[in-house]
Length: 91
Image (cartoon, rainbow, N blue to C red; front, side, top):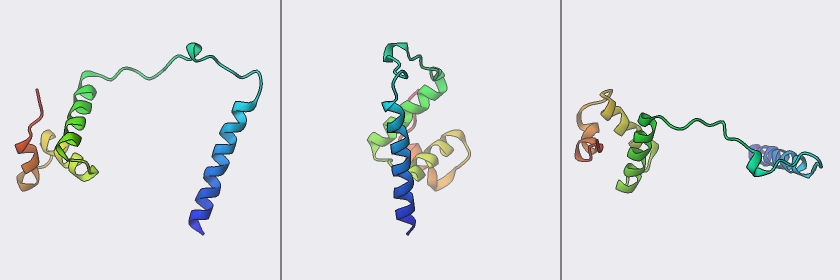
């Protein structure tokens, strides 16, 4: 029953989004759209690079990634940080 309700809700959202595309007079050329997302700061960029490196090393679960960053930030120590010690972040 719950899956049916979720599927019905998703279908409603999709239909609402598509109906907005069909309205005339609301077309905005892509060149006129300005992104309001700020550029990442240097720390965010570094964390993104570390995250990509972790994925390459096989650390693909949320648990592994959170443990790595907790060890890196000093919130976690001991045996749980073995992977971190074996693969320290690049400077």
